[in-house]
Length: 311
Image (tube, rainbow, N blue to C red):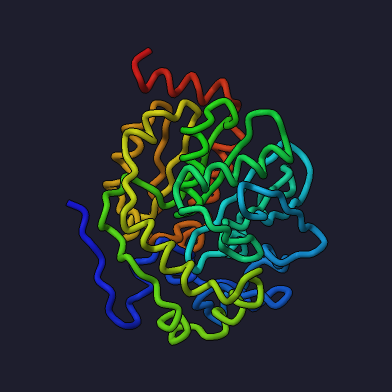
């Protein structure tokens, strides 16, 4: 049985469906950027992902402008960060590893970084439509999606909503989800107690900083009510790699195993000695699984998936 989280002082970061920074470190700031709760002794990417004017673009999706950046050349990979206090910069090491062989499209989720909040109610469908708007600006061919936490759920929602638009998905830290698992509020004042500098950075990047506190509470209210199960995973037809840390408390391994079993063409990598941010806690293992999956011929993945289903 999946346990609910309880908010208690500095344990706030333990229940958030958010960035890796609660569980592993990031670099000294690049271009003025930092992770939430960034340790000072862990080196991250020199590229300020999420605030790089040289790579910046935007697209209108419904009632909001969605900010994204483009790096490298080759087959596109769309990268979706964690939510709440998540940011593109938390995935810097993975992006650095991808951009040598791929065109990497780094998206700031609605209400995060330089993307607008809009006024539409939050939903997985809205998140998917935002990403499809970005994808449509880059390619009209099936694309590869890589997401962490909130970003992983978004990538899976895109694959379920528009199967023909997605070639394969890497989902890090996302499994089945029942209503009530996450608390219904994320007070900005509590975040400031934990990392005032990061909250100031959030305000500096936000197009409407005065709305940030209300947005974070609305964001958690949405996830508090969210259910993700067979209706999503059962609609996905492309190959999916689920990646989870063996100590993940945001998406416990048993829920990721459930998601894997509900998905027609899926694989699972359990990363040892890792929490929710498996790609930071044990990068070599996570990266090896991700790179093998991304570089495998699609026909091979589809054939292996068919064998799994007994076809």
